[in-house]
Length: 132
Image (cartoon, rainbow, N blue to C red):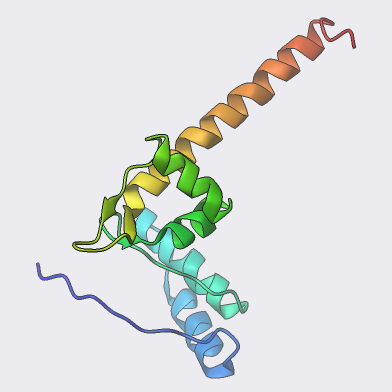
């Protein structure tokens, strides 16, 4: 199966775009996980949200990686310097690119640590060990 890269920007403020997204979303039954995900994206567009779809193998700039992680670009710079986030340099350039999959893996790891820390705090609190 051939893969086609679509480089289109849909303006979620445009009433025609929103109506088309709503009409297509209404035709999906959510019978499969794919339909559920596509419907969710279309619902977001229909309600005026901007949706970005990236392939895992795509590469982004450190600034875009920061947006995806919800952190500053400087923090991404530290993550790359520390080896926590892998990157490659563009040939003959100082510019870097980070694979989307690596950003997603790091985001999942950070979320797992955050929820683990919350669970630990709750357990300590419930056990009455949090004497401040």
